[in-house]
Image (tube, rainbow, N blue to C red):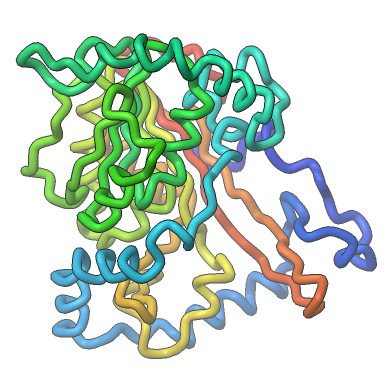
Length: 340
C-alpha cells in the first residue's frame, strides 16, 4: 500500500554513468545496490544496543531542555530557508503554484511580486489577527499550521511566497527559545501569523485553533524527534484539527539515511531511534511505518515516497547517500479526487 509513487516535481538529475559522479553536487533518485543495502543493515545492527532505561528516560524527560540548548547555540544560523517547499508541496501556496508551476525552489518572480504588494497587503492582513472573542486567524479563509517550526525556515518562505489575503499561518515548537526567535524576526507579522509553544506529544494540551479548521498541517523533520511510542497519539490528535479534505504534509528521515549510519555505539535509544551528541533525539522511518501511523489516524494516502539522493563533496571526493520520506495524507471525511 505504500510503494514509491512517481514524482515529477523534484529531482531531474540522474546518474547514468558512475564515472560522472563528481560532475555535480547532487544526484536524484539514486537506487542502492544489494551490497550497499546489506552494508547499511549491518552498520545499523552493530550500533543497535540500546542505552540503559534510565538514560533513555533522562533524554526523553529533558527533551525540551536539549532543544532549547540547540536553538540558544545556533539561533537562526543552522537551517536554511526551505524554498523547495513550493515545488514539493504546492498546497502551501496554491495560487502561486498555478501561476509559477515550474519555479525551481525560491520563486524569484513571486518574491519580486511580493515587494510591490507589501504596502497593500499590510492592510488586507491586519484584520485576520482580530479574534472578536474567537481564535487567532478566525476570519482567515486558508489556514496552515506548521508543527516544529524551529526558527521559521518554513513559515517565513510561506508568508513571503503565498500572497493570498485570506492566508493565516500558525506555527509552534517544543522549544520556547525557537518560538521567541520566530517572534523577534523582522518578517514576523502578527496579522498573518501566530507562533506559540506546544509539545506535540502532549495530546491533552490545547491548541489555539478549534478542531476541524485547518486546511494544511506541515511536519518537516519533526515527527522523528518524538519517542516512537508517542507518535501515533500525536498524529491522531493533529488529524482532528484538519477540515474535511484538509491535508497533512510530512518530510522526514528515512531508514538507512547517512545520518543513521553515522551514529556510533552508545547513541541508540531503541530500534532505529538515537540520541545526538547535543541530547536531541531522532528516528528513521520506513514508508510502511508512516503509512500505518496515518491510516490509524483515519487519513488517506495521497503520496508516500522515498527520496534517495546522492550528495557529493567534490572537494573531498566524498559521496553521501541521503534517504528521506515524503508523505501527503488527506482527511477522508470527504471524497478524494487525488491521484495515487
